[in-house]
Amino acid sequence: MGAASRCGLDAASLSRPERSNSTKEVVHSCNFEEFPALRLRRPPPPLYRRRGPARRPPETKKIVAGHLDTGRTDPVLAPAHNAPDAAVVRAFSRSAFALLLLPLLFAGCASPEVKRLITITGGKAVPFSFGPKGAEPGRANGYEVQLATLLPAHDAKEIFYQFAFTAPAGAAVKRVQVEDVSEEAAAFPLIDDQAPKLTGNRWQADSATVRAGEAHLTWVLTIQATMRVYRFTITDTAGKRTEMLHVAGYPDFMKTVIRQKWGEKY
Image (cartoon, rainbow, N blue to C red; front, side):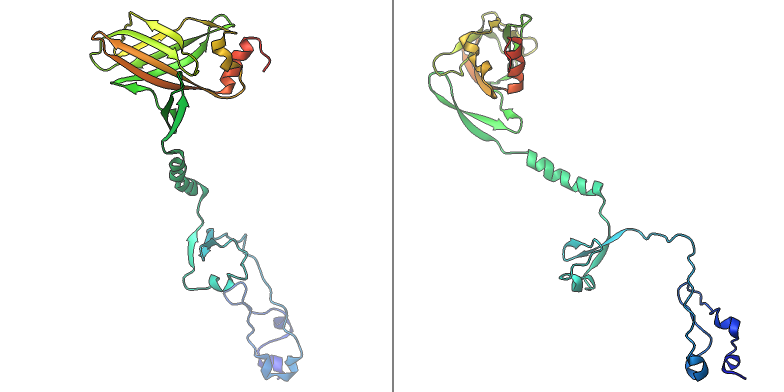
């Protein structure tokens, strides 16, 4: 009996190796080392068969020395990849990462309050508080400024101011004066209300219109953000005077709209 017969092989079986349960592991039922005659014949190459598309395992990344494994092993960190303290964790989603950054974002927005000296009429330098939303409103004796702004009038060549403040409960106001005290040389009076009326606890009034070209409005012609300081002087029926200083900011894009209404080209 030939070596192949004793091994239980024929010519056909030599070309069809038996497979184990694994799709990649190939075994033969004969030990070729025992039969010199068969030793010269090289076993056929293993046959592989794909059973459908390979399933992709859940995406995981390995944390090594504080870094995410991206599939490319750094030669310097290679020994650490197989270290016992290399923990395998699921990939961090972008949405979860964004949620972690939100507290840091809002913490950055909460900038501390700062003080700034602004020189007003008479050459006096007055400290003003600025927070994340800009200058703090003017406050004194329970009164608080709610509104102080410049607005375009119906006539394109004119503007007017609008002011408002809240008063403490039970306040009886006799007179309200509002001035622009931004210039060192002199204050510019805007409102003198000698019969003020409170709606609830709020006072509001508009100034007379101011025409383009007046010296008071030269700041509108400058190409930059501008801060103006307004002084509220409130006199109650008992004769007590309350003074509040309020800072209003005017960005240049707002000034540009006014300049263009006046016929300017910038």
